Length: 168
Image (cartoon, rainbow, N blue to C red; front, top):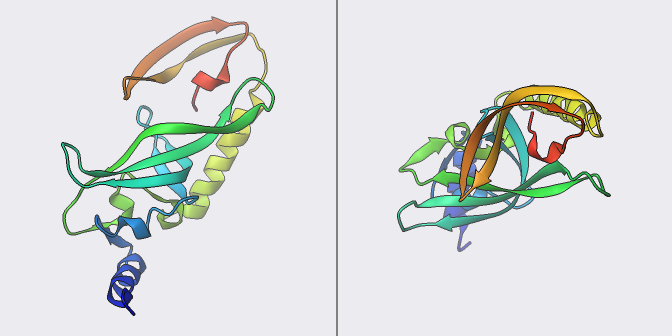
């Protein structure tokens, strides 16, 4: 009964696809599959939320997300979870549509089933590329340096490659 009014507010907001910054805890539940966009290519990604920390003050108030995603390691086990940094939801005033946030639970995406299928197909393609190949490679890549993503235009001829640094 102590939190009844807050829980009613949370339910009402979530039923309408909205949230407030202070009630983000109701949205950012650990182990939730989250929708984010790649910071470089802007393609959709699905990541699993490990922890969300509310940073209320300072220069950049936000919800800071610790997330993990499936990665190819090149050694046994070949695939595993890896951390991804730099996922934040900046502080906002009033209520916001959940889908307008930079990261939100995948279940709130307007085309959840279609997006899930697309991500699974892309993942299958990515898994099929493991191994050593002779390839000509021309694409956009990125790496994290000092908490910022650096975009790279890559053109290589490879006899073997580490898929850890390549993102589709």
